[in-house]
Length: 116
Image (tube, rainbow, N blue to C red; front, side):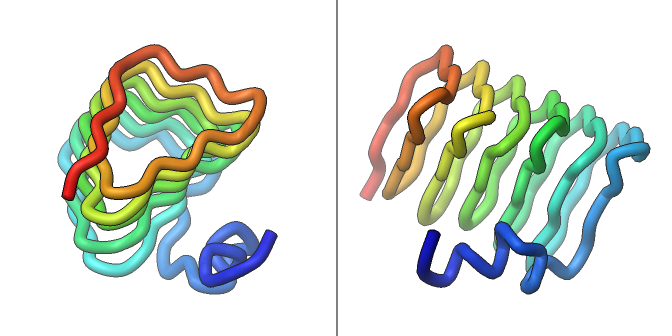
């Protein structure tokens, strides 16, 4: 693993973390970075980076600059820059992004659209 995103994988640049015992219902917006390790139900709107941690469950439509998926998301994802699905990622919804990276082992049930 290399590059800028390595810091996000290792929590070095994550500003806020919702822990694995956290259940959050509602509309969430943030500007910098957020990692969800628990359960989130609602909608997410961000100009920053969203990391869905391993074992996390997100039932939401998501708009963000970058989305890194290592858990489960049920909903559509619109990323201004990039969506990266890691090996334990599960996506049940449509994805729109400039760049999409899908690792071996990912479960993806939806449509993918590359935007400019």
